[in-house]
Amino acid sequence: MKNRNVYFALVLATLLLVFGVWILAFFRSTLVTKRMETPQAPPRQNAKAPAVPQLFNPPRPEDAPESIRAEVMLGYRIMTETKKYAGKYINNDLSCTNCHFDGGRSINSISLVGVGARYPLFRARRDYTADLTLRTQGCFERSMNGTAPAYNSQIMQSLLVYFQWISKGIPIYAEQPWTLPHDLGNSHKPDVANGAKVYTDVCARCHGDNGQGTPIAPPLWGDGSYNDGAGMHRIRTFSVFTWRYMPKSAPTLTQEQALDVAGFVHEKPRPKLVSTHPDKVEQIIPLSEVK
Ligand code: HEC
Ligand code: HEC
Image 1 (cartoon, protein in one colour):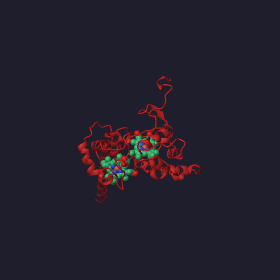
Image 2 (cartoon, helix red, strand yellow):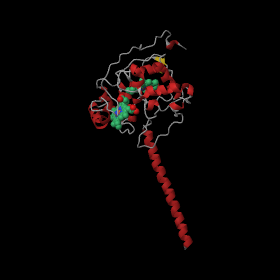
Image 3 (cartoon, protein in one colour):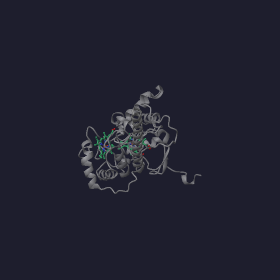
Image 4 (cartoon, protein in one colour):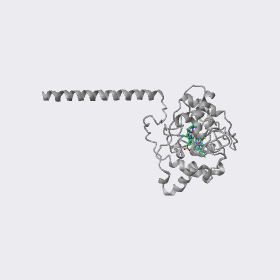
């Protein structure tokens, strides 16, 4: 009799175990299918932490070898306290880190990790292949509404050393899945009126009622913001950035809301690009003829 009870208990426990495992597997597979619907699923707080690609492992600035440490630290400070360390070259209230979080070291922003292994790169906007100096000068003139530091300036050289250091260990031209996607891949047409509502409901408490910024978040339009030549001024870039990373640390918008608020912000006034850079490099030998 006793043996039979033990036997039944054992059978019951085994059944419960099998059932439990089955239920778990079921929920996991629905989760996986859900994720597959959005191939570029953002690292949302409520979702399981995304698997960090193995290559993404930026070293800390303070761990740089002594021979380059001071330069790497200066580069990091230029990124995070731009006005203080490169004030001469900028003309708005932003810091590089406002878009490239943690000086570009964060995977949850427009990351600059690996940028040293990604350039020189063909840039369709200008129809030429640019190195990292030309690319960085673009962010000074556009995102920072400023002037480009020269190649042989301390500011530029420190940034280049810093970019190289945080790209340590990444093979040249390796695939870097953490870079910002080109767009959301969603054909929804921005609804500016709904964007205004999204702005008031979600963004204003940090970025200010008039997009002017507050002590906790930088401006989104007006004199203190990026100019109309900046990458962030494109609806596709603003929307993919906002959908993935805003509100900071706890993104909540749907893709449609992100496109709507991008459309709303796009219509607001901001500085005009005044570039001192030639928009094209002088091409003596047409690339199309090079075999
Ligand atoms: C208003 C937002 C914003 C600010 C501020 C900003 N950037 Fe950028 N930056 C961008 C965007 C958008 C891109 C393009 C990203 C893309 O297309 O992948 C970019 C790209 C870059 C790239 C090339 C990255 C790549 O993967 O191709 C570098 C380097 C860079 N920025 C450096 C800087 C530096 C240095 C500063 C400060 C002086 C700065 N940025 C300030 C928005 C900004
Ligand atoms: C909880 C506060 C908070 C909320 C809410 C928030 N943001 Fe931000 N946002 C930030 C902070 C902080 C930064 C700068 C991050 C840094 O420097 O590390 C930022 C940066 C940005 C930037 C890039 C820098 C710039 O000023 O151009 C954009 C664009 C942006 N936010 C858009 C939005 C939009 C659109 C919304 C509403 C959907 C939103 N944010 C809601 C805190 C917030």
